[in-house]
Image (cartoon, rainbow, N blue to C red; front, side, top):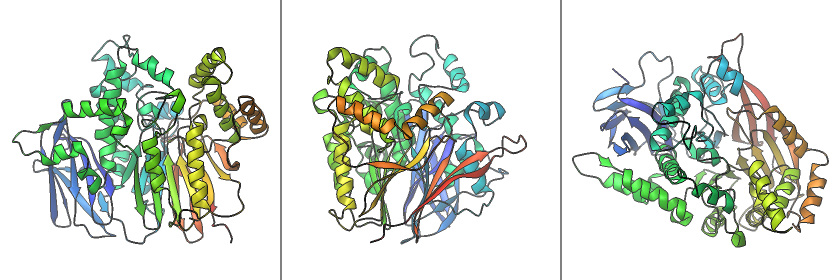
Length: 553
């Protein structure tokens, strides 16, 4: 038995009541088989720029079952690894009517899990979670693990990534220490997902993903001037094509349901290939990625899933932007129409996962709305240039910096909460990451659904201490009224509702969990803690807990 044929994975991706999908990267062209419960499913690999992948679709599964599986490559069993010390990987199908339980978080860097890595980046909360699950912790398994952006950092690379870059090109030539092409993205994903504990976790816990800026580059699509600056470089075209192409392979493909895969043009090529040799998808994938970057309406990265009485909408808040000053929007009209059609009542809970917090602390929301107005010319051309520099320097490009989009989504959510789009949910919750600190805020309203923002960030990439002070200041005290004055000075109207903090902010590396319980929507955050210098075996420790009970009627 050997694992040398298996480069990365297996990863348990989309799972529902009767189907599942398992993703792998292999060393060479091969047939990949999954064996479970006396059955076998098989898929051929496809190639992208010299790398080989397979997504094995499993169908006809029994609902609500947990079935151990093995993975074979060309008839050789490669997973589970012998004597790994981890429990057997399983296929956990959903049970009809079971309340949703999920984990989520964002922003995870790939550095070693030793004393040095933990000193600079903190304990990897995902790895601590994996070790807790593997040890038979009394904590129940989630049905889903949602990664809400910055799964990899293409612009802020580790020493290990820089060693790989230096071995293949001049690291002093543009783009320097940042990623250049598909080969470097493939190595970065390998660094992110190859740790044994995390690899085991991802082989058995279904996952869903969406990108944020660092999956491509800091402030990706912050403004039209940011994009023009990137397009003027010698390396950006290859970077954005490689970034989106590798995202489709490593992250997005596994998000798709069987129906969504059947409607995907790239998957149709993979599934329909009957030639004797392996399908090489490189050219088609690069063309697709270039088209998706040039015309965001040509492909949708967002998706929606229903888990019994809970709906989860995962929103692309990066690639689908409209950056034209006269029609500036965080998500363009096609994406907004799609979102509008899915923001509906009739569910006990409505969860909107967007990498960027919809409800920042009000002081920061006002600053971002003021900055957008100034950058777009509210105070004249000279101030607009200064505003643009400030926007990019301070990352002022969240929902509050796209007022048109913010107000449209706010109106949608208010209508749902007031029962104007079907029976009102108990809770409408925005689940987000990005900002490198965690907090919970709630819209101030006396009736209808509770509307909350629950942020979990980072999984492993703590905010510098000087920035923690800035975040705390923006969350409390005079930040909101001062920010409001600034926004009014640029003729920005007040938001359609007000919100205030329930919990936080806190700055630990952490992973959040969510559970639909009889008493309400339960949320809790956990961090990894090292005892007695044992950096390889961190334990989980609670950071914060909250139960959102339904509003009394």
